[in-house]
Length: 269
Ligand code: OGA
Ligand code: FE
View 1 (cartoon, rainbow, N blue to C red):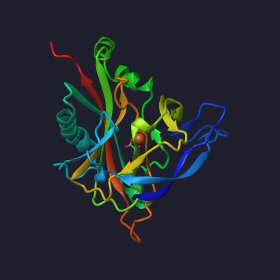
View 2 (cartoon, helix red, strand yellow):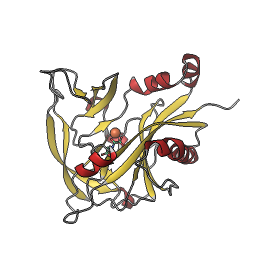
View 3 (cartoon, rainbow, N blue to C red):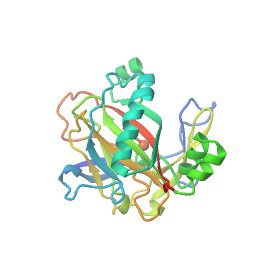
């Protein structure tokens, strides 16, 4: 177990927003304030039985990639997406898995300039909401196919993997989905240049139980569920990067890639 400070969302009267591009003159980048809380973050490697996607909302798996350069977006889309789809299919029993988006992240600014990577995200959030989960399916498929797919259970699962092991700083913490109450999830806008995405920001609740996988290696991957249409299973697994008090001095910066997948459980006829 380690202790760290997480930057929760402080209550505010308006709908929270975050700009992902330079906002119009006079508009702030975001209208939110942080609510910094010290929490215990438990090592999920010690959990018996191991966590699952349907109970806690996350799991750890071993995964060796054949992709040499995860910073190359074309190789990631052509090759790594296929590996991830197969991995998620195996672990969930889904009938169809479609990888559709990814981010590479580095805690080093120099590396970000060189590779076009993004920084770790240091506030607890969940990538999709009750509304934006199904919306993603409608964005990516023709209307008739989307409606057909949405008649059955579907989920959004992120596959998070270190590009270089082991992760010695800014690891990813995940919150046991069963400890998040609906009122802890605050619908928030992500303003992109060409569209507005909806995510949940997380409001503090002392019942939250946080986990991380200590010193993750490059041959491991964490799956986390960011949406499930089935209310009987884990649906929203909030997560955030955090400062690890047990990091060595001058640790190598964390480098990671996360791929988002649509996961369909269509009944086979
Ligand atoms: C994610 C995510 C943040 C990080 O994988 O969805 O928010 O710091 N990652 O890796
Ligand atoms: Fe996320």
